[in-house]
Amino acid sequence: MNRVTACATAALTAVLSAPVLAYEQGSFILRGGIATVAPDTSSSALSLNGGEIAQTGVDVDNGSALGLTGVYMFRDHWGLELVAATPFSHDIEVVGEGLGSFNLGETKHLPPTLLVQWYPMEPQSNIQPYVGLGVNYTAFFDEEISSTADAAFAALGATGDAELSLDNSFGLAAEAGIDFTFGVDQRWLFNMSVFWMDIETDATVKVPNLGKVTANVDIDPLVYMAGLGYRF
Image 1: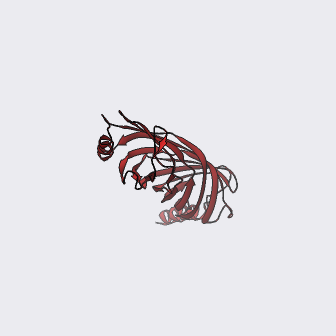
Image 2: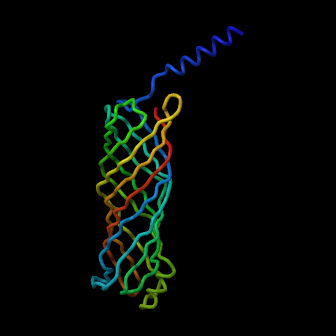
Image 3: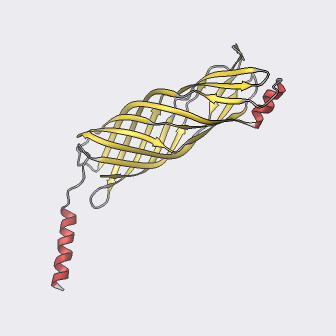
């Protein structure tokens, strides 16, 4: 019995005396959670074969996916973060009075982002706010035209299904977030963060017998993410 008690006491002492993992040089942080992209969309008027279609524009709806980030603390208070995600899906709308408002189609995108982060609190603090600045690359793929859009183009004289494409984008990115650590050795954390990304794309719709419908679209979303993380 004494031996069991001694072993239990030794194990408990080892756990309680274990050093708290800090946000310091050489540590790694993984975070994951639900991320929602909320575009702040503005666009040029739609153009048909170079001629502007007055009172038209493009809007992009919100999309959610699994967000993943990995951080390497290359110095105390400073981290390098890579942001990734499963594909986001967005509906794209034609808006305005020129053609009326209708669903143009949808697209998916991946937003790999690299940021340098600053953590102002002491490395051992259990509450860690941070800010970051970096660059974003947005890759669009699986663009599809809706049946509603095909019907609208057919009414204008189209002789077949239209094709939608969006150019990839490269721009600045910024973030602000906060970690709340928990657990016996403070390895686990609850995270909340928001990102801003400079995303601009040229949208092109190839319409048989009509030509090309184009628009320049500034998406510039805020990306909200909340989830859990683990420190190594």
